[in-house]
Length: 542
Picture 1 (cartoon, rainbow, N blue to C red):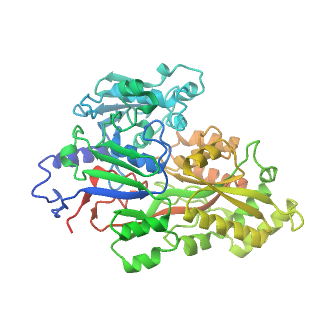
Picture 2 (picture 1 turned 90 degrees about the horizontal axis):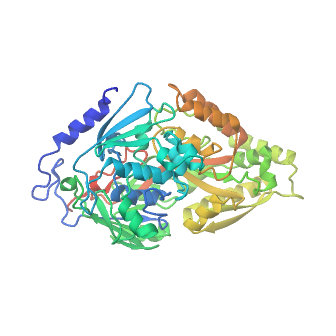
């Protein structure tokens, strides 16, 4: 076995250095700042979350809650670096296909039971179990866990998954291929432990307040669907003494402008800035309006499955529609929050990734428009035979503004008649996932900070390849990338294939554009994944 990586040693040393008394006379133990008496953090979410079951949750807002309620093997610090979670560290062999995690002996569930390696074994088997049909089952395969693919396909029993509890504090994971970035993937919610006895006792009801047992810094105390979710300090959490925020409230507010009004009324500590309002708000509230890079991409996907429109089977149509989207107008005029235009799927903020040259990015918009018009004409569409389709997005003023802008660009430049349709979040996810659409909005935030978290999405077996794009060369390149010491050339070729085949229309890469109360301390603006943990935040005294 190789030695523990240096960053892990540094993280453990830092943890040890902070092991002394934490709260002293209402001041922050590290910064010395005076702390507010009320340590409640309240923030806005757009939609009701999909779930708080670690093996079922599939959206960003749900994962934020799950990171508070449950703790995985590894966490991230404010810079996005790996730090100990339930595991105090790990070792790996020279081939990097066997990882052994050492679990802390003071980790407990909220009912007082110890958290053991078996809890992770149970959760990971549950993730890939066809009986659960987890929307993130494919992530187990993506992690290259031994036999995961065969288990998901129903070809092997779940007990053959390559995870073993050597003892209560030792978890061994065997991979089907070398995967140097495997530990990064253990910060994802789908890998968090689940309490077997509670799941078996309550079934689908196990995550309800009063039933749920969790091992994170917080417990779920209230949930009113489509209205609010509340989590409060878990006294059984192994590091509870260092936690400062007592209560976290997520309020579902579908309207961005209504949320902003409630922020200024003092009801929210954080909310998203509505499209186009950042420059004005930054000028008026320089300490509260913030923008920083995010590891996320905003795009539209074509339905290329058998149920998709015949028109989209023609790459000329897809390319024409992508060329005609003036991303600069969307980024600078509509959003105006520092979001970079996107001509590739993978954002430039991705660690170790260099955005490759793709022809469209080097063209002027006038040249793009001219080529788009020529391509659509070649495909047989003109004023007497206009291209028609419906574009689907989940309900949001900002999504609507972007969809309206794109449809107008297509109408003015190409004579395209795009009908807009919006749906509530969960219905939208089901509709898109069942290929019951023509063109649909998509957004992807990296599950870990490596380009494969984006590009694997467009491989044939991906569970979130909602457009059902399939390309044998892409599949081959992404398989090779898993074991490559230098995957960048492989990723470059995949992005160039995407640019040529146009299964999606990348629109922009995200920025975190928030109004954040200046009383909130330690928000991780330098963590591009935005894996934030309420236990690391605090409220300053005014």
